[in-house]
Amino acid sequence: MLSGLILIPLLGALAAWFIPSERGRPWVLPVVGIVHLAMTVEVLLVPPAPSPGRWLQLDPLGTLVLLSVSLLFLACAVYAVGYLNYRQERANRPLCAMLLVCLAAMTLVAISHHLGLLWVAMETTTLAMAPLIYFNRNARSIEATWKYLLICSVGIALALLGLLFLAYSTVVARMEPTLLLDPLVANASLLSPAWVKAAFVFLLVGFGTKMGLAPLHTWKPDAYGEAPGLVGALLSGGLVTCAFLGLMRVYQICTAAGGDGFYQDALVTLGLVSMATAAVFMARQADFKRMLAYSSVEHVGLLAVALGLGKGALVGALLHLVNNGLTKGVLFLTAGNIHRSYNSKRCEHVKGAMRRLPWSGGLFMAGFIAITGSPPFGPFVSEFSILSSAFVQGNSLVGGLALLLLAAIFIGMAGTVLPVVMGEPTRVEHTDYRDRFLTVAPPLALMAAVLLLGIWLPEPLRRIVAEGAQLLGGGR
Image 1: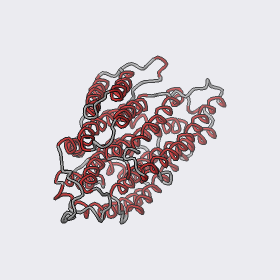
Image 2: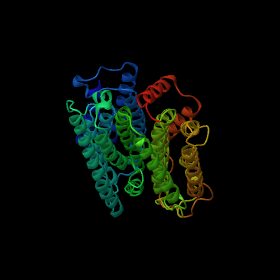
Image 3: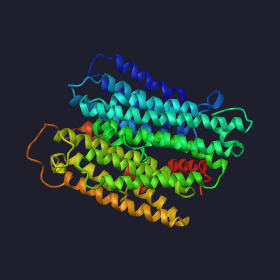
């Protein structure tokens, strides 16, 4: 079953590549998405046995990431059918095939318990995402693609060096060299502290680059701004989620090894720097898709802070991982609709979106309210859990700084979003695009899920989050 979760998207990618019809090919995406989600639900209900050698297995952390990625991909797959029907001037073979390769790679990240295999899967997502960012094939998109490839490739190379340091720490400890997660966690106290710290630094920089932690985020504004909306949704809600899982795997080992709080302090510091960076660049942002990129920088910073705080904040971190991914799906998909209708991402050209595109404009507004931590949506619950835990633990300075930065980000984001969705539409109509079922239903479904998670947390999800937080136990 675990192998099938990877093979089904790869077979779908092969089918999409050889299907000759430009109109028929996109339908492979929702078909594979439905099958993948059904298989994901099945492995949640009946957990499969680990693979021989235990390289592939599902634990609560991987399960949470797998479910989040599968839900987001299905929404993006349905959206892609309507989007590509509108963009008939572009050949969609590379887009369809690479989307499915990305799904396979992200699935492998979720179920891999061998850190070397996880690294290979992360590198695969880097390569598969590049043609998706370049879909519009203009000067700005090629610049964004090269910047994404260059920076993320350097980051993932540093992560590989970190894995080598981690493996060498087992040699220093006179253990059998391994990168399997379970033996590393079980024997973490025997590992060389110096080499574990060196490995953590390189892995934090490597996976932090993929997440977009400041100052490693410089690829994000261009890539998110120039990629189609559905690609931005998968970058922000899928790739970020997988990179954070990689960081959590490293965190499991480091906290089990013990120490003087070095790992937690590094995470909290880098997280607050990311939130501060987002607050500065989100103020008076003139491009609403680039604004969403800085929103992503903010939320990966909050995730890093939560991971560094440990204890009760870990539950909030795992909830926020899901809430952020789903809410970013709403924002990027509706931003793509608004972009298509106005033929511009510039705020001075886009006014009155709620009148011109009632569904997309309304959902974009709702997504803004949700992602800034307002009730009754899911991000409010997870952010409240993280910040309250900071104060309960006595980290009042961290909690106060995070609250201050969140308030500044809310004001900056509102200054961009409100003029875009409110008021009178601009008089010049650049395109004939209006709201359509296939491009509105997916973000609407994601918004409903975000609302549900703010009102009621299903018991299976609550159990998975609690068990995942236990796996991460050992924070301050």
